[in-house]
Length: 240
Image (cartoon, rainbow, N blue to C red; front, side):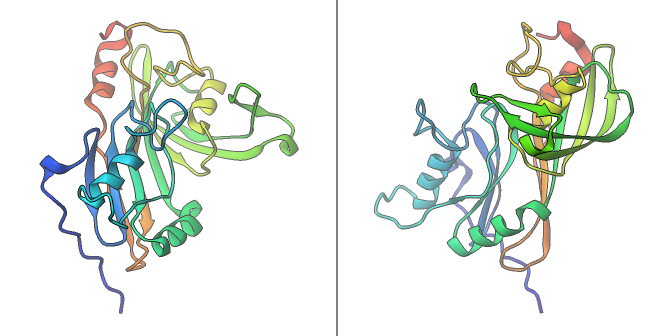
């Protein structure tokens, strides 16, 4: 008989790390909704203010000698908000990483213009250049296969609001595929248009459905779409 994982009794919200909301915590995993502008893990410029570092401090409850820690399963770009899953044990980490490609990940995005169909899939092979920028290649031997599904939720004069299924998890996949359609994600300085007045990259990891490493039952974690996305859809490019 399978057992449903018991939710871990976490500390009061006032002790939760800044820059994220804890969506779920138990003895095996911790799931957060991170804000745009916060790194998942450190880089050469920032090591302390990251989701990984802040969650490690959180689970150790201020005890630097504690052996408690979190384990990285996947990452979100700094500019992307939404659902991030961390393991709390090595066993949970191995299970989630082994099964990761089978889990369902949904994103919400605001893009420029309108796609040719209200629903569809985009596929290509993605490679990375010396400037660490991803791009689609025609020769499959030169890149990794990437598949993105989408459904148009709403349209305005300037933008479209999309629900996106991430079938493969390549670096910058959604951003490249939207740019390939001449409909870059709004606020994408790397693959899109230079624009003023846009507050952030409008790409959000809305939900993940995974198999829990303890119960082996499917569980879904959702992060509310930032209000700014709907604000842009209502107000268009003049939104400030």
